Length: 424
Image (cartoon, rainbow, N blue to C red; front, side, top):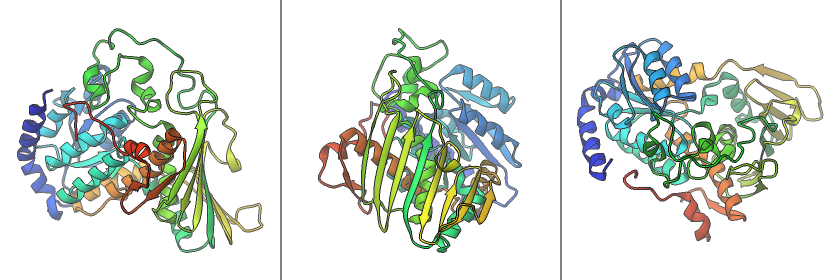
């Protein structure tokens, strides 16, 4: 995959996509127009997305891409006869009859195909977090705005009716003055992958795995099964642990309800539970200074005991008139001084609303619920918490310039170095 190949294919893709892009551009597509999709990354969440999108009306699946032949073959079978099957995502982007791509790769492979797809005139559904780092998220936002592309980030809670109602109540002042917000993720020792162990590196990747493509922009390392597939979450080269990969859902709701600005963050924690090969911590507490309120976030892998009687995740908004607790199952409002909720609203689904919202946006050219800007802002708290943890100190953040004040070492972690030729 030489650098020249990226340039040539990007140009070819941009030209080839003209017909499909024109058909869907500027509101030209009617409500019943078929949207043809290509899938980049088809294991796990990607396989779920493929099946779900395929079940929706007026959707075609024309191409699937994965660097693991097992995932690729399963996806091709699910998609049906005649589907393009490839380990090179650029072949998906080069197809002029594909209108949009669905990206469900590891985090370090979110931004590059998203940018290439937009260069080729395609819309994008991309899993969270929007980028491996803050600079990548900003790059995707800039491209979406410049190229007038629809981008929906996989923050499906944005489309969940009970989340929408809860945020509306908070923004309308039903809780009074909210001065403190607590968000959390809590798993026991077997949750979210559990103990990864310490297996040795292997001389080569399993048969059928294009490990060179899987590494992509990340540094070259020997293959290890714990750094591959689900395990990628716990390595800085590929992701940011559950602080950035699950916490992003919670941060999104908090910022939606309270405003997107963050002024500072201080995070502490460590690998207190597991003595395995992971790089990211298994225990973290982060405190964010925000305009008019304080946000605290807790992440732990050592105990599944729930905060406030909720699920293994949730958010509490503490206001002068009432407190609101929300997770994916429901939300409850507790009037100040009460111990029983006065309002309880159950979940009415999220994914089943989020994907149709994306398709509607592709057809109408109106912004979807979790556009690129929403996805970028939602990812910032998790990335900043990780940077604070790694630097070992409090960070002062300027939300207007998206810079860390007076700290070159921490600022270097706002972006990354890319292994040629896999660059933005």
